[in-house]
Image 1 (cartoon, one colour):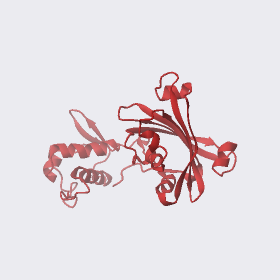
Image 2 (spheres, one colour):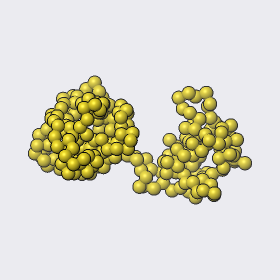
Image 3 (cartoon, rainbow, N blue to C red):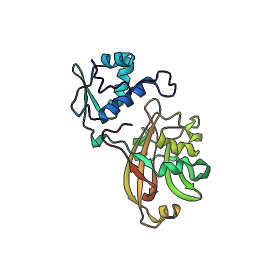
Image 4 (cartoon, rainbow, N blue to C red):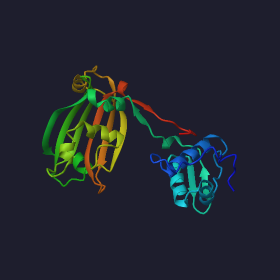
Length: 255
């Protein structure tokens, strides 16, 4: 039986809430309970059936809610034993792109300039990363994104050359860039791999970004994949460090 002092009746499920499904409401309740300290790391949660009976939910819904919390690193499932509260691992932290995303979100004052667009033979490195045949061709793009006429993001992109693919036209739009960070606005992209590393602007890059030569910057390398899990584009973004603040929350947060 679920303890009333832990699963309080004050933490209820609103089944009429269309915007927030029951499983998401339950995942938030579980996080609140963990954050309260009633279930410390190593503690075992009540069974899915018991939680379901308490809230009037199906076992499938409960399992889905626990899955959400487990993906966030707060729970661990052990087959044949149960679900246990874990100590959050630093290696599982997900960071948000504060600063950069604020600029990309301000579409009214943000502009995209195509500096270069050409069709060319892919070099061996690109052939390998995009799984192209030897002698394959790519669309090579260099783009500059500005906010209130001040450039803040330089992008070089290599796309598989396919005149029939919607990616060719879509990649010329600002939404294609912000979509790589937000996961929105790119119906042909299933997933994206990003790697962030420190960099120093060379003279040409500094001139394009109206920054100081040798200024410290972030370089964000990426590869994105279609729904066949095939790589269809790669490249990098370059932005002075002042435009990126990486933030995350680690530990037992309510939300």
